[in-house]
Amino acid sequence: MTQAPHLQSGEAAEHLACEHLQQQGLQLIQRQYRRKTGEIDLIMRDQQTLVFVEVRFRAKSTFGGALASINPAKQKKLWRTAMLYLQRYKQPPACRFDVVTITQSASGQSIFQQWIPNAFQGDL
Image (cartoon, rainbow, N blue to C red; front, side):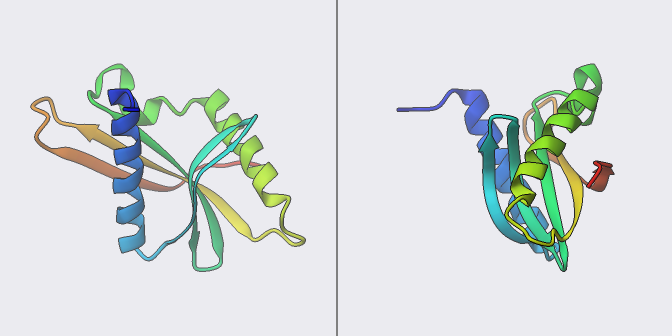
């Protein structure tokens, strides 16, 4: 069964983001952690810090682009999902929320990628 094009590009964006972060020294722990509260695209480790990564792909930068789509409601969903993940630890490690935005150029030929460590604060 083939996926819809927007899902294919979303998975490709997650793959691209994961590769980029691994090149920066982060280690992948899990992809697509899903719970009723939401989904965390990538869970990684940056030395002793657990990193919850939200990947946003946009074919166009209109309407504020990929970063603008991570509004307070989305942040709250990510925070709640991260809290569920952290229940597996007796003593939870230091954590942060990173964002990777990927935007395709108007011609579709090039891709701009931006990594924003500690993009927003949760109450972790």
